[in-house]
Image (cartoon, rainbow, N blue to C red):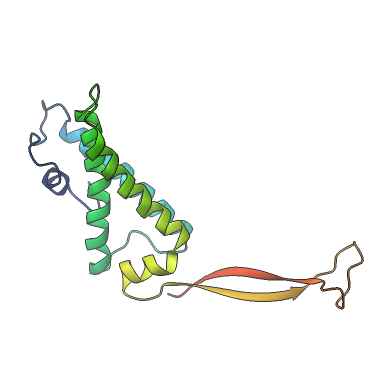
Length: 153
């Protein structure tokens, strides 16, 4: 099961809910699958930003244990509350997970510091001359900025 969290971590975020087992409303197998799915989403987003996955740094494991467990706990709360209006806690936990995924996409340098303790990803700006068929010239500003993401290993 997961690299970042465990069934016990998810259960700890669901006070008052039954411990997962073979015959509980949410089975141990389901929770394991949801952990795998949430971790795959996190790893996919991290990899898209140039991070080596899975994250193995101690600091990163603590952060990801919290975030992945919250996402899975949110799914569990939504499942327990299906058919009722009492889904706010599930919505909040899922929103917290979704916000973390967005931060990976939008703020990779900050996430790098959170997970690895250093600025793992940096942005650099460069310009280049273009040779376009529209007839623009140097004097006419025939160049543009190029933003590239570099990853420090």
